[in-house]
Length: 120
Image (cartoon, rainbow, N blue to C red; front, side, top):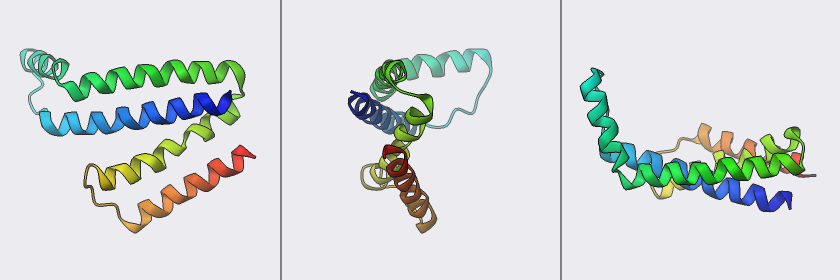
């Protein structure tokens, strides 16, 4: 059952983070931090479908994480769900068209090795 929760967490977190990146790219940088401007920015973000998707996906991830913690140790849950870093790097490269340098690929690979060690 632990692996089911991990799969849900990884899928939801990865989807959420990709949607957050896409949503904020569509919105653009927030440069004006006066109260009225912040309110307008929040109103725009609340109507951004990617940001809405991000919030929903992260809610799923949160509750799945709670389910995982109910049946497994924290020392297993945290490293096992770290595979999201690797999956997000791959999807950022191919879906978001980000440039990923060699050091980031090495780091993502080391995360996979760490998850494999914890899974044993």
